[in-house]
Image (cartoon, rainbow, N blue to C red; front, top):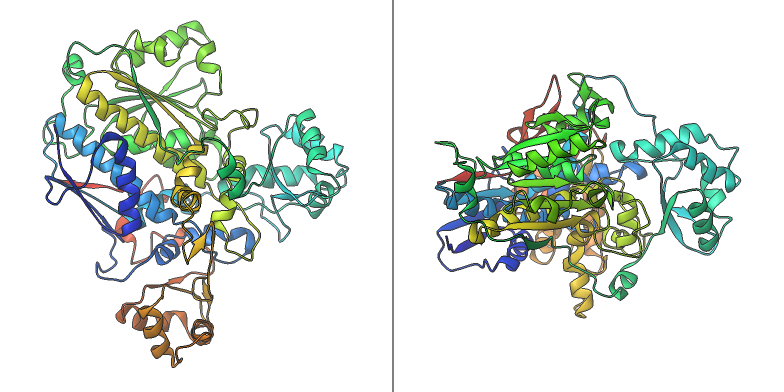
Length: 602
């Protein structure tokens, strides 16, 4: 089953993909019998020779609009999220191809793209924007949202899933005059809207308290609170991790190969590498469901276990075909089964499912698996070849373990605000779900690594992933460079951006360009600007004075990556964009979602 691999594509995406495969000893070779190619735009209708960059892909995919919603204008993401996601998707595709080949598939090439990596972060926002449901979330105002200031110069993120705890906390801070009911609706909806503006009285209330006082009140009110940390603090933590999934062998070796033991073979003629793999998923929210969806897209059969009455996400508006679009987006193509896990009979039913499956995935709260007798060792006794996967919030971290493991708390604790925000601006975690999405990509990778190792040894695996590990994966290349003392001219923790590195407001839209070195000189000649210390600023002013739509074509013809952004932040317009049309598929009714991000050829 040994194979040599060849990765091609944008350098950071390739580096990301290869780093994910290093723990398995899979390395690049001059010639290869399995090729993994990462393009900028994949099967989109964009011309394959169109010059591109991380910034222009962020623009085309809608990520800049999502990241800038709280500020009311497109905002570039300081971390190279699209390229990094593409690298992880490439590792997924490679592992899936190797698993499939060991089970009889003939796969010679795997393809994905940076643009498809970007759309992973935007998928559920596109689904919501394209429904015909007129139900809407409360409209954010111009007032600031989290994080909140303290009297001693810190900023904090808070989290609670309990509206009574929310009200009690703010009453204790003297914010009783604020509209707490409406504020709660806005705060809760930020997971679905990528935006959160709250009454200014809430910020005034926290600003009267020190960090220690706020932490004490939050603990008494059962509200999770963490300070927005910075990279120097993250690096000072002992044993900080680049975010790889933890994969350990589980149980004794099986007497025969897993596929033979179950008699499950790939479907004849199937092009998907995981055909015949069975997955049982009992997860909620985004991290777990998206990880299960990725396996389903690779060909696995996924059974999603829900509580009696169904997952709460089914009723979260807006709906598509009568079901919440967020739920449908992340769970399409799965088989659904309701089981009451609070009862012994329900847990026996789940164990029976796990006994006949290849992968078991859960994101239960800490301690729940032990309470129910469904830890990895418990299920290994009935299925020693099982890949048992736990997707948590904090993993093995001890300091924040008492906090809710949710996206925005994780971003704050992981220091992502530093990597996302350029020098000269306050460090701001993003308001769209970076940790959740990357946590899902990590979880999928861990399950694939477990399946790949199982094909070699016949033994099951215990996989551990977390939202925190996902956040660390997004910034590992930055933190490792800082730890090694390598200061990049373009960044040292915080991005160092000039006037051409940010979206440029023009007379008819927003323009994104990527020009450095020879590209800047070429752009200067196009704009009639002479080389010199102020050339970048002069070029930016010249671009701003013109039309974004008129600039784009000549810039691209000159080999300068560029893209125009719709300043109206209309995610529903993405599937209708003639450059992107091939990357989407219908969901239910009018709703649309990104397609599978891989293609496999034999």
